[in-house]
Amino acid sequence: MNFLHFIWEKNLKCLLYLQEITVFQNNFKEGIFLEILDDGMLPRYDTEDYVAGIKKYNNEIDSFLGDICIVQTNNEILVRQLLKGTLNNTYTLVCINPKTTVIYPVLSDVKVNAEA
Image (cartoon, rainbow, N blue to C red; front, side):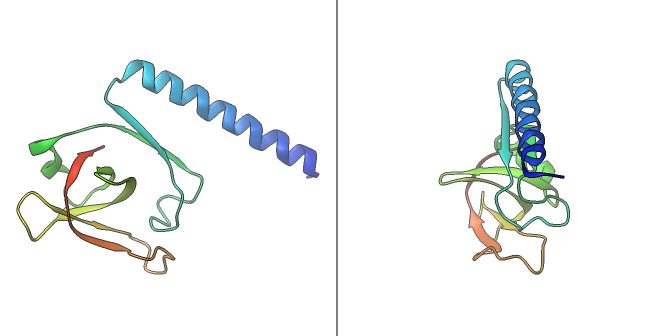
């Protein structure tokens, strides 16, 4: 594959993602989407993968304990495994990749605003 072919394929892939995101946003007002930017969720999700979901709030969040979720905190949006925190109304967010380069692969007692 030559360089121009590679660039063309990458641009086409981005265009298709943008179309899917637009359709998703138009159909789901509580939708959230994210590009994976780290290796914390390998092998399930790789860098440059896209994920999307419908936001859940408050008591609905507990029904996703143990799942890999898009998590919205006060500071960021990321994809992590969602576990119960040690403090009331908090969660522990975990990278599933044991060889991750993420500086803090476990975030304990985090206040989660929404998950998807």
